[in-house]
Length: 98
Image 1 (cartoon, helix red, strand yellow):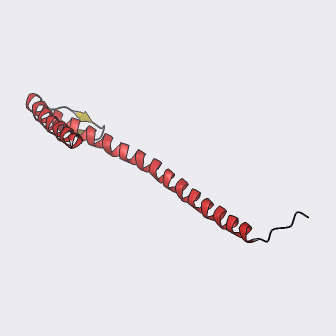
Image 2 (cartoon, one colour):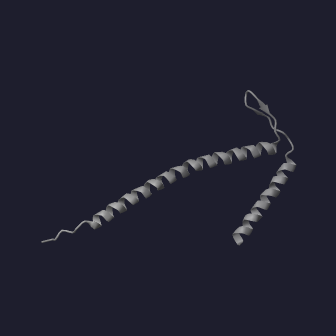
Image 3 (tube, rainbow, N blue to C red):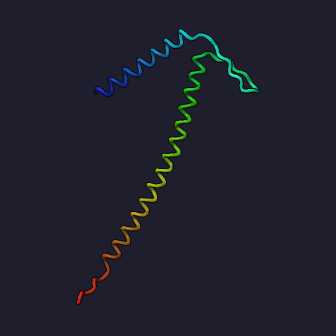
């Protein structure tokens, strides 16, 4: 319950910080890509950079998650092979020590 309340308070405080940031930064910035020029507001520019960074982070995470998923699948297959081999060895008749 305390965790949920703290998350809600953080979200509300971020919302008010964004509103404050928007109200004090009405200027526009110039972004020149060489073949096209954009002049968005500061807030829009910062928001776009944040969103692009978030998407880049998700893509990097997805690569790592796919790698872990493949490793987990390989380990499960190896475990099944080892279990089937073990059950086959258990069914073999034992030799007498004599």
